[in-house]
Structures are given as structure tokens and as C-alpha cells.
Image (cartoon, rainbow, N blue to C red; front, side, top):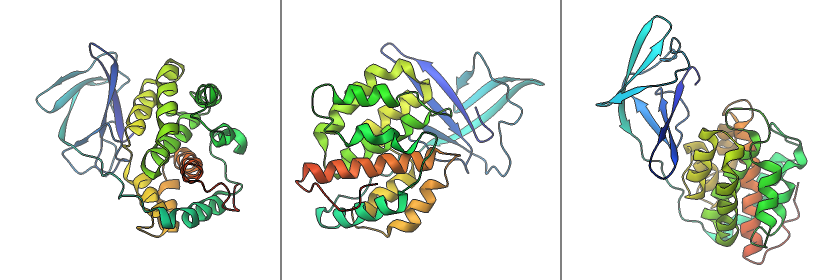
Length: 253
């Protein structure tokens, strides 16, 4: 949990799923349920980490240090999907993104994303990438997972479906190595769902918006999550260019 979000793990017949209860000013995760009231201070400040939560009729009751605490959810929100990719602008936008991220590192060393520049559709390559990244680095969503989420989103939306499929399958198998929240966000990324800030960068890569403001908004997320997502998006954009037969933009990091 955090000041602006509480994460609930629910166990279904096939898999565990995480629901994020979000304050209105929290980052809109794709598995989020947004609270009714405007929140200028954290609505979960007095909620203790709970072993059980009672959910029903658009509310959740937690065990807090001063007794039960109830929060009310407003609605599920539907993540906006990126606009259709346009192949023409991608090479120039991907090169701009590479330049903007040159020398940048999130919660892992700058070389951590290097396995993603392999052909992940090649047998064993996606598993090798997951071995190096899943669960690695700091945070409730470890940095390596954020990088993988960015790659999955870009490969899915910009035109590297074989690599996206291979990495999604490998990430599902590697899910026990990371947190339940992070594994669920990887599942959403594999299906092309993301927070609005990541969608904004994907729109920019497709030529629908300027890149610089979208990248600033993304990198403002968390301590390292935004930068890690951006590094993954950059690697996924390069994969899409390779899939289209464009192997060198002249600006690899």
C-alpha cells in the first residue's frame, strides 16, 4: 500500500488478480478502481497493512490501527488505448526517444535492458531477458518489470507482435519471481493496457503528439518507474523498427 493506493490481491479459480484502489490523484493503473471523493491527502494514511479486506457494494473495509476504515469506490476506469501507429514517424520519434534517454538509468544499471535488443522471438531469448529483469531492482513494481512492461506495450502497439507474444509468455512463466502487483501489471501490459502517461509516449512515437512533454510526464511517475517504463518503450520501439526492416536509426543508446 501507499499514501494514494491500496492493492488488493483476490484469488480466483485460475489465477490471483490484483485490484488497485486509487485516490483521484494517484497514477491511473490499468487494474485500478478510482475512489469517489477528491483526495488532497492520502485516503489510506490510517489503513494498516491488512491480512484481509471486506469488499462489497462499491466499498472496501480495512482493519486500521483505530478500528475499521471504509473507502468507497466510484467506478472502474477504462484505460485509453494508444492511437493507431503510423509507420512513417516512428523511426524519427524512436531516435528522439533514444537521444533523450541516453545515459539515463532508473532503478537498474543502464545496461540492464540490453537483452531486449535481441530478437525475442528467437527460441530462448525471451526467457533469458526475463531471467535478467523479472523481479530485479527496487520498488513495489521492481525496475526490471517496469522495463518489461514498457517493451511489451511498445512491441504490441508499434508492430513487433512476435516479440511481444514471446515475451508475454515468458513473463507469465516467470511471474512467481516478482510481486503480485507487478505480475498483474505485466499481464495488462502484454494485453496493451497501460497508465495514461505511457499511452502518451506511445502516441508520440506514432506521430500523434510531441514527444518531449509526454516523456516528461512519464518520467515524473514514482522514483524510478517512469524512467524504467520509458527505457522499455524505447527498446520496444527499436524492436518494431527491426520488425519493419529498419535496423539502424543511428541513435541507439
